[in-house]
Image (cartoon, rainbow, N blue to C red):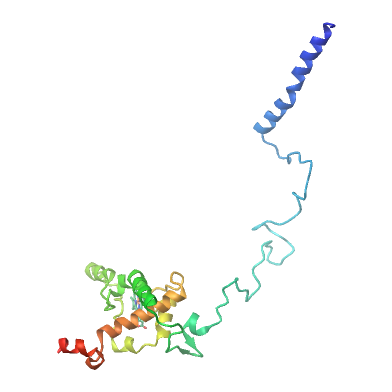
Length: 213
Ligand code: HEC
């Protein structure tokens, strides 16, 4: 075998390392031009991304706002009674859902989480937050209402539902935290609380009546 063959093999071996050196360099340096991309497969196309400007529209935004009146899938809240506590223009006087024991239990639990801190476990307006605020005596505190006043006993269920949804005067709104079904459960539970504090003796079961008198 001629000796130059060994020389040629050595040179080729050295040259074959060059691609690896180039790859290593490409990976380690920055470039403003896009990388070599042989098969395009529609990977790169002219398009606008979210938040980019677009002079085609008067407001200059590429992201278009939803068409007015757009309703998200599954969010068509058409039933005024269920979603807003209204029947026609009046507050609903009936519940739009069937009262069941699990629902009352749920209402009790949700009431304990969302209402009792201010209104108290029995709804007398003596929750721990209210007690603490009383103690601080800062003078700016509006006490939470008691549910056991004639005014609040006379409130319709639709009105109570709306108080939870949108708040009232100094009370904050809880509509974004409490789903409709839970709001109705809480309303039913508030009704139960009101009844628990104000029931004529003749409506108490007879066997218990005796022990009351
Ligand atoms: C952060 C304390 C706070 C929480 C929590 C709270 N409330 Fe109130 N609520 C108030 C205050 C304060 C008022 C009285 C507002 C006023 O008179 O300005 C009030 C008033 C009310 C009233 C009387 C409305 C009226 O027209 O006079 C009802 C009914 C009521 N709340 C129900 C609820 C229910 C149900 C929950 C639970 C989902 C709840 N509240 C949670 C503070 C709270």
